[in-house]
Image 1: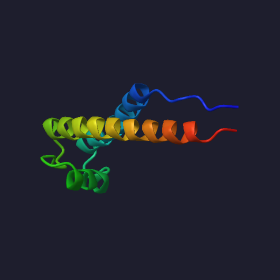
Image 2: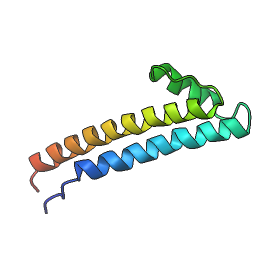
Image 3: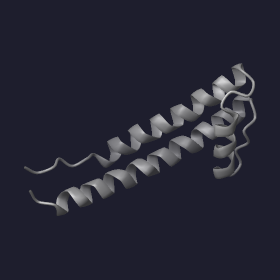
Length: 91
């Protein structure tokens, strides 16, 4: 039985949208309820240059854009490695 290959593009889109959506939702929730997810947003701000974890719409959009890009890159790497290792193992 052989393993199916993952779509690199599909994995990039899925991971980018999921991670970007998480940062977007937490950022919007932080705007609505002061302090919500602040530690998470501070962590993201320490990773993404130019992003500040402030409860403003421009800040939330910048953090979400960084997260979409970051998640997409992670999805590409995951799918590439999965396909590499799935191909090397023959059952």
